[in-house]
Length: 316
Ligand SMILES: O=C(O)CCC(=O)C(=O)O
Ligand SMILES: [Fe+2]
Image: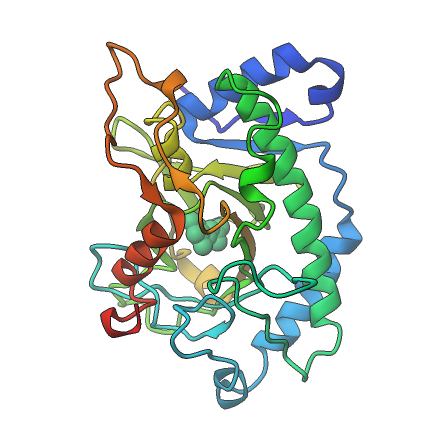
């Protein structure tokens, strides 16, 4: 059977709400991933961000390294190749990345909402990436509204749980692969930690999701589609009604290994003090509560950052 991650036009959430909610729910229960078209984020916003991040990643390593922020678990600024690895893997991922967090008007409502740092070498970096951050957050809020209805919650269920979310935009550069005998891959198989992830740039080959039968399914979407997937925090909140699907980015074969790959996931997080407690509507006789112990989102995040090598025990 040929399978493909479905794509849905989010404009139908306004015009054909009930069917849209049922279809997005089906896409996520089956795949944990769904392509979103009709999102209204312009090519210019995306292109400006790609142009800025490519300029940054092209800088000398020692210049980039100055933007590493010790003790934050990579929460803001730059993280070099060889630092992050998938949980339970011994081989670090073949990628470097930058994290943009939420800009705040006043004092941070939680210490984990660190201030941003910006690369002075690329003056347009801040405006371009933060514009994309805001537009993706907007889109993420609409996806969460649809998911709230699918979960028998009020449409605005997530609104006051994500308004100070510790969300991050992660521009990633996967450099050309020089050592083709490496045991590492671009991104080892993993599940995302957060509520939902919105991925811009999924048109480039490499992303694959793990199906229940153990096979890997490449995610291919048409240009302009934003891929949105469920992370572990939402999987936990929904008692696995919405599954967080394992995925990876594989190394390209042949001469394609000489080409870099760029992508920009936006990890949407709840407010740091949000307590993840299984939704009663997701518990039944057939689906007993897997998580009787609620957990604070920030504690959950710190535990997970340590597992993937971004935070050392002593820094917690
Ligand atoms: O680069 C991609 O396509 C996916 C990246 C990813 O899965 C991640 O950073 O969590
Ligand atoms: Fe991921």
